[in-house]
Structures are given as C-alpha cells and as structure tokens.
Length: 518
Image (tube, helix red, strand yellow):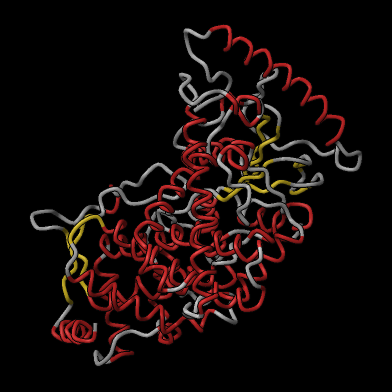
C-alpha cells in the first residue's frame, strides 16, 4: 500500500523529491478545490462527521490499508450513516445506509453518477474503457442500452434453454466433485459469461485461456480500485522503471494493462471473425453485431460483460451453497418445496421459480447474511449534495458500504441470524429492502443484474434439488458462528471444502438420465 513515497533506500534523494512534489501538489490542489468546488447555496450546511484531519495529508493516516470493510464498519459505529474524510487531493464520503444511498445516488442521479477511479486504475492499468468507469454521456448510454437490449428484463428469457443446459452440466460435475466449491462455481460461471457474451464456439476454442486471464484481471482490478496509490496524484511516477524498489504499482499496472487489452480485444476479434463467416451461434455478440456492426461501443459493452459478469454471480452462488452447507435443515426445506413442484419426475426449470416462495426467501437471505459483496464502486458528484442536514462537497468520491447495509440492525433487527422467513412476513415488502440493491444505485446499477440473478438462482437451487452438501470424508460440518471469509471487497468462504451426494433414488435416476443424454 502506497501513500507518499514509492522509492526506498538507497534512493533517498528520489524519495525526497517525490515527497516535496506531493506536498506542493496537494497544497495547490487544496486551493483549487476550495475555489472551484464550493457553492454558496450549500455552504451553510456542515460536512458529515469523520476521522481527524491533519495538515496537508488530511485523514490519510486514518484511512484503512487492510480489512477495508471491517474498518468502514467501525467508522459507521463511530460517525454514523454518512462519514467524511479529507484525503490528499479529494474528499471521500462513505455512505452506510441504503436509504441514504437511494436519496443521494438514485434520486439525484444527474448529480451523482460520475466516476473517478484514479489515474492508476484508468491509465496505468488501462481499465478506463470499462463501462463501469466511463463518465455519463453518449458512450455510457449506448453501451448500457446495448446490454439491456441483449440481457435486460425483456430479453433475458431467450437465454433460458442455454442456462438450463449449463445447469444440467453443472449437476454432472458436482456428482464427481470433492474440493473447494467456489473454484468450481467460478469456472462454471466463466463458461456461462463467455458463451452468453461471445458464443459457444469461442468457449470451445479458447475458453480456458479466456477464463484464466479474466480471473487474474478481476483480482488485479480489485487491488487497483480499492487501494491508495501515489501515482494517482503524481502522474510522473508512471515513468519510474518497474525494477525500482517500492514500485509495486508499476508491476501491477503493466500486467493489468496487458490483461485489459486481451479482454477488450481478443474475444471480440474472434466473435467478429465467426460472425463474418456466418458461424456464430446465438449470443449477445451475434445480436449486437447484426444490428450495429463491429462498433467500438459493441466491443466495449461485450468486453465489460465478459470482464465483470462472472465474479458477482459466482459470489452469490457460492454464498448460497455455503449457507446450505452450514444450515442443512434449511436446504432440506428447499428440497421439499422443489419436490412438491417437480414431483421428483423432472429436473428443476427456470420457470419454476415463481412457485418457490421459501426458496426465493433463502436466496435473498443468502445475499444478505455474512454478505459476500461489501463495497460498491464509488460515485462522484458534480454538484454539492445536501442530505440529512449535511453537505457532500462537489467532486467527492462517494463509497457505499453495501456490507453494512445488509447487516444494519436498525433495518434487519437480528442481522446475525440466518432467518429466511424475514422475507416471507406479510409486511416484508414495505419494512425491509430487497438485497438486490447490492447491484448498485441509479444510473450506475449493474446492467447485467438480470442475468446474474437468473443464472445464480437457477444454478444454486438446482444443486440443492439434487444433492446433499456434505463435509469431506473425515471432516466435520463447521459451526456457522465460526465461518471465515477472505478479506476482499468481494468475499469468499475460506474453508468451503465439500462433496455432493444425491439426495435420494429419484435424484440418482435424474442424474443417470442426464449422464446418458450428455
């Protein structure tokens, strides 16, 4: 983690130059922001509370360098639902309330839909082309419209047969699987995203390479987005050689830039070639190429879906299956509800979802309990915003503590308890939010949320309909109170090693039938 100097001994002179340059930059930046960003109409309102601020560096010394989510939850406990921290060159605001996010990010979307991921992420790592990072405007609107046209609520049903087939393939894999479950889930979702985006032929040709490179890119993207880099303020540091001690940012940037170009261009080139030959199957690329041709917005919309489409869905499926591993009695209730619908004579279908109210409640509770998705991608406001009597200054980086919102005791009452019934209460619709707000707010809500929700629900529930999720031989089922998760904005259960055994003879028969048809 970098704050001031990237150059260690024996390059003291270089370090001094960097430090002095940083001080000068921050001083000038502070004066500029005071002149440009203050507005008379809102200046009467106080800033939100937050950690102490020191001369020049602001609250940087109090900004977390690890355990981000846990640290921001402590901020909430100390300062409330809206927390302000002055950082070098910018204002940072963390919102810890879903209600406040709706007021600020959804109802004032014309003021709060900007992005500022930083020079490291957008330029050094070459990820500024991503739809989630480009500023509101024609390109942002076009690409969101393209994705919605292909996998929005009106179009996502056209992919049901394909998703059901992949769900069947997943069931056959699980019958033979023992090991770390999130890895298998991520591999399956990589296939789903590539085939939905670019077609099955491209998965057959280069699926393993596409999945491996994208997994690495997603990991590096999290590092780049949720860390504090000196190059964000001192752009000339970009030209420091990667071998210089302390220049971690340079090595991360170079590798990520290569992966970014691969994800952006390679699968699109393959899809365009197959489209020209008339050999591309039904997918998002075929639809958009038919309508718009090999346009840059088509390329980047497809690249965005491929780059970001699998991780959130994988996290949701893994969270659901992990919870069924921890709470087998809940899994048994799901199985009975599904068996009532299918009579054990057929496999679960996507259309069955509306007949599974308890299963739907468990899906929502799995998104909420011990949340796997904790921090939303920050917004930036182009005007001062006043909310709940405090002012969010123009140009602030506005984070969202999604994880805390999902366990806020003021909202959920008993957030530490895994209780799906909370979503079945007669007044649940008005008293508690749908956890799908984790997909984002306003004009920045994830355009792929409908695919993530449909695929995630079907794959996860299909698994429970056929299998008991059991500990490995010789191991015990863990205590839910002791469940451990990775320390990343997108969390995974650390010790989710399991095997899958058919629930009964009818499940065995359905699996054998699948095997014969494969």
